[in-house]
Length: 217
Image (cartoon, rainbow, N blue to C red):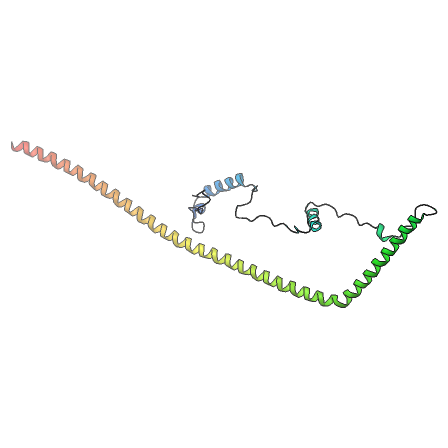
């Protein structure tokens, strides 16, 4: 039995680690399986105790848009390769503005290549140590998470073991109380039967007394 009030704790009258009704009655197991198959549907809403989904990159619209693109299985936008080319003016002969645009593009790509060369040099100089430190931190974090997972698994095992022990202890007490209740019911029935027999004997003796009184008169 479960209480639907949100301010109270749900209490279920069941000892799953001790009850063996399904093993004793095979037809009952079939009924349970049919009922589960009939009601086994994916829930449309989460349990109230489940926290809401954590929103990532709320302060970074670009990364948030990228997460949404991956979640919706959209293809990655193609890379703009025009900025890596050196297109000449389309008209012949080119105008001053077209040549200026081409020259600005060439200077921008030259600066980009210079920055890439600088970044490669910095990466070769400081990159290995930085990656070693980064990998060390990741390994330490992974060990902490694995330790927390093992502790949680052990806590789950301890809780289930305690529940099993408690239910087996309570189940034994319930059996003892049920046996005692059966014995008391049997005693009450025996007393009632004895009372009926005594009433019948009293009636018989009363009739016999009346008969003897008539004979004496």
